[in-house]
Image 1 (cartoon, rainbow, N blue to C red):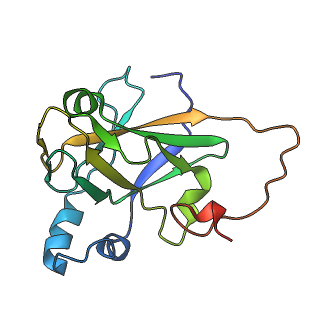
Image 2: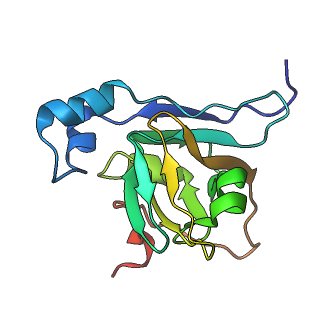
Length: 170
């Protein structure tokens, strides 16, 4: 058994939350995708990253972008963050990129109105004219938990209640 700290738990968001992420599929199609969602996992005991799996087939031509509702949320202890990156092989072969370069999932995002539903906006940034095809259930992104500290004079006390960018909204 690993000596690493156990500080988090992945969960699947409610069907209602997942369904609200789609506007181009009927409820039966969405339910089929939802029922096949897989929680992120590490591939080996030495892996730092937890693989996030594509909930449906993704095909991206060079320059194309898609927003992917993962159906996943994560509970983690305070003073930890989940950092999201493209899977190394996809980045290397296709220049697959997260549009925010590194996704940051804060510990209090779990309590947001959207249940802490993690989305990934990815772009095929290939300059070699390569089409990216990711089958449903295949790893496309990885998350790494990182502990962080705060400054001596930190006095943050606000409570998050929203998703992406909500901590800077007035």
